[in-house]
Amino acid sequence: MPASFGLVPELTKRIKDKRLRYKAYQERSTEALNDFKNKLESCFYKDHLLSKIY
Image 1 (cartoon, rainbow, N blue to C red):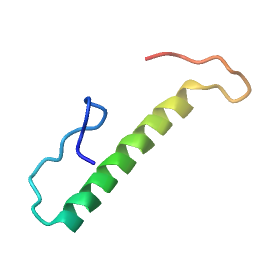
Image 2 (image 1 turned 90 degrees about the horizontal axis):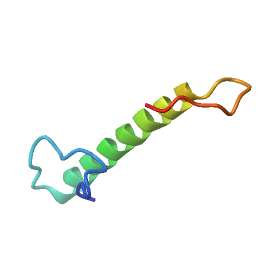
Image 3 (image 1 turned 120 degrees about the vertical axis):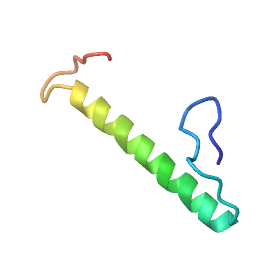
């Protein structure tokens, strides 16, 4: 879906073909979620529940 509430970045270019646009939404969202997951995992120590907040 299009970016709402600033949760994910806007697409860099306009895509008229609906299938290609939805594919771009999917890729953008997957990348944003993977970035978040990596940041979250890097905050946790191996055997501790303590975390750093960025």
